Image (cartoon, rainbow, N blue to C red; front, side):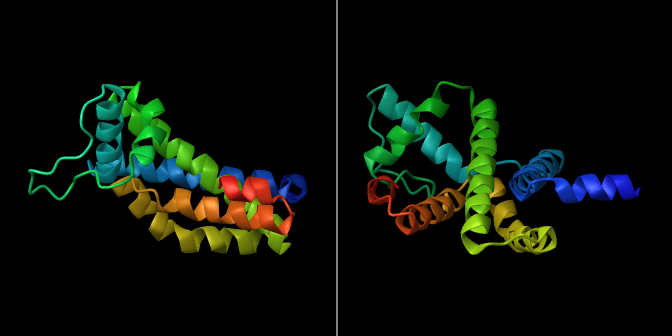
Length: 168
């Protein structure tokens, strides 16, 4: 048992964060699938807009009373075109695992910038985000992605990489 603890303590904090968040995302997606609540309602809007943009159809629906209408810039629909080449169920999973990777990496960068070395502290930070992550998975929103972009931007500014910061 002590050899396991020694190995555990030698794991780089980056791998620990990435693995923990990715594992929690995977468990949450699996739980949503089992409970038949895996809808990603907002992602469906982005996905449909990307397909319409790709096929040169209108991406905005003005004559509808439906709440789930694309109301963002065309550039935003353009960002989702890669997902539109997949069938919807696969696109959902790829998108959410992409979010898991981006969010995990942003926590790695945040932990480096803040000098966090305690695995237990990072575990509690992830636990705090869990409720928000569950909602992201259920709705398929982009809040986690925007949060990650903000972390990447702050990190770039802190490192005097203004060009990269402006791209975020």
